Amino acid sequence: MKRIIQYILLLAVMQTYGQELNLPVWTQYLADNDFVISPTYAGIGDNLKIRANGLTQWVGIKNAPDNQSIYADFRIANQSGVGISAYNDKNGNTRQKGLKLSFAHHLMLDWKSKQYLSFGISYNINSFRIDIENFNNIYDTPILDPAVTDDRSVNNNNFDAGILYRWDNYWLSLNANNLVSKDTDPFVGLEPSRLLNYQIYSGYVIKPKKNKDVEFEPSVFFQLFDSDKRSSTDVNFKYRKFNRKGDYYWVGASYRFLNDQFFDPLNVGPMAGILQNNIYFAYSYQLTLNELSGFNSGTHVVTIGLNLLQNASNCPCTKGTSQSYYR
Image (cartoon, rainbow, N blue to C red; front, side, top):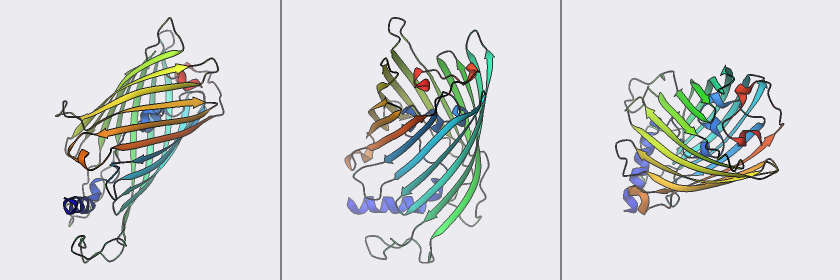
């Protein structure tokens, strides 16, 4: 069985171009970091918000995917915001790094009913590389291709775009990522040219009238890949509790499944976070429930962050659906 797992990982290396620009979204966005999902969230709230994420997937499997990322967004005018994010991804003998620059503009549709509309766009720079220094020409781990004599790398540029609608405590975000098809080598059949994927993120913040320091937040995240039409859905729930100083903690859970396998989830797990004196910490654990569950203990996501430079806007269109945007 060990040898079978090694060959599966080697096969994944051979098909790594399918991973390019399509890094998986796990639960980073649930750590009060909606900017992970869409550039439209840049500038919403009263703070410069910084979030750093560390993700270790398939704990227990050697050379399993490992990812580090950092996100920051802030408002630059009453109705506009900018953001920047960077990531470093390791998957077996592949390395991927990227930088994303985002801009968002927010409009007020109706002041009385608190309806707002936001538009966002991102420019992406990505670098993808295959390391060969770990290739060993032995029976257990044969060399993939004798013609590969140096590190293979490629750089790409692309764009994301999104639209966000908010109505009081409700939100609906529609996004299209990797809008530009990638140039490919016609002699390499494994490399996809269509990297476009669509994302829908929607939810509602329930604020009990008798207790203004408590929030309940159910949400749904849907992702569809244009190349092969595969799709998945996250069903999430969060509970927040605020204190008099504006600090808060939250607990929640997430359930992810392929849309043609609703009762056969990919993973499910708890999560929790806390904001204390503008310092943020969150942890999420995703228990793997598919065939790999016998070989790993799940996926761990840790988020740390800072909320800085609090400054309210004169336009209600930069207000978020939760109190957590103003702490």
